[in-house]
Image (cartoon, helix red, strand yellow):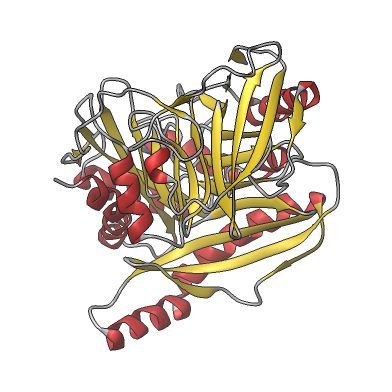
Length: 427
C-alpha cells in the first residue's frame, strides 16, 4: 500500500438547501462521482489517496480504511448514506494487473439523497479550518466553495477503434473457450475485447457522464480516477445492517418494436444457455455472501431487466449482515463473481489470462464508495472506459461463454454492451 498525506482527518458535514444537479460541480478533468437517478455523491479534490495492488488489494484496503476511520474526527448531523467520511474506490480486476487500485477521500463531497442535500469538507487535522477548499464548477457555487480555474473546454468526444483484440481474434478466443468447456475443465468463462481512442488533453469528462446519466438513469453512473461508466450491476450494498446485491448474467438485444421486444425478453427467459450462464453467477454470489449474512434470500427465479439497449436476466439477493464485515471486506469475498470471470473461478481466471491479449485494468472490478461505518455501494465496473494520462481511452465489453455459445452471437453481444460508451463519447 502507498498513500499521500496520511494524516488524521477532520470531517464536517453540513446540511444545505436542495441541490438539483451534482454533475456541474465536478472537476472537468478529474471527476469523482457516484450517482443513480440524480441522487448520489460528487467529490472534488484529494484529501487522502490510498493505493493498493496484488492479491491482497481489497483486504489491505479494508484494513487501511478502518485505520483512517479510527483516526478521524467526524461531525455528521445528516447521517445518510454518503454523508460524513467517505472514500471513492476502484479496484483492478486481476491480482496481477498493473493497474492501481485506489481509495480517494475528496476535499469536498456534495451529496443528495431522499430529498436531503449536504456538503462535507475534509482537512488534515491541524490545518487551517478557515482555508478555502478547491472547487471546480460551471458557476459560482451556492455552497460557499471557491470556484477553481480550469483550462478544460473540449467536449470530450472521440472515435473508438479495435484495440488489442479485433473481431476475428475475439471469435477465435470464443472457439478456444468452447473447446476448453467441452473438455470439462471449464463450465463458463467471460471473455472481453477492447476499443481504444484518444481524447484531447483539455477534455471535459463531465459531458460523457451527463450522456450516460441521462440515457441510463437506473444504472450507477460513476467516475473514479479516470474510470467512467454506467453499470447496471450492484456487486454489493451495505446499509442499516442489511446486505444486498443484484446479479446480472444472460443478455438479449432489444426488439425494434413492442412486439419483438416482448418476444426478445421471453426468449431470454426461456433460453437454457442464458439460464445456465445466470445460474453460475447467482450461485457464486450466494456462496460468497453466505458466511457473512443471515437469512440470505434470492429472487425466486431470474427476471428480465429492461435497459435502454438490452435485456438482462437478473436476480436480487438480500440478507442481514451477520458479522462485522464492511462493504470493503465483502468485496474481497465476492470478487470475482462468475458473472465477470466464470466457473470454476480459478480455471476461468487462467483462461482469461490465456485468451485475452490485454490487461483488463479496472474493467469488471469493483467501483463505488465506502463510509465510516463500513456501509457502502459498489458496482461491477461494466459499460465503462478508462481515461489514462495523455488522454488515451480504453473501453471494454465482455460476454459469458458456456456450452452452446456461438462466436458470432457473443461478438454481437459485446457490440451491444459497447453502445453506452460509444454513444457517450461519440463525435
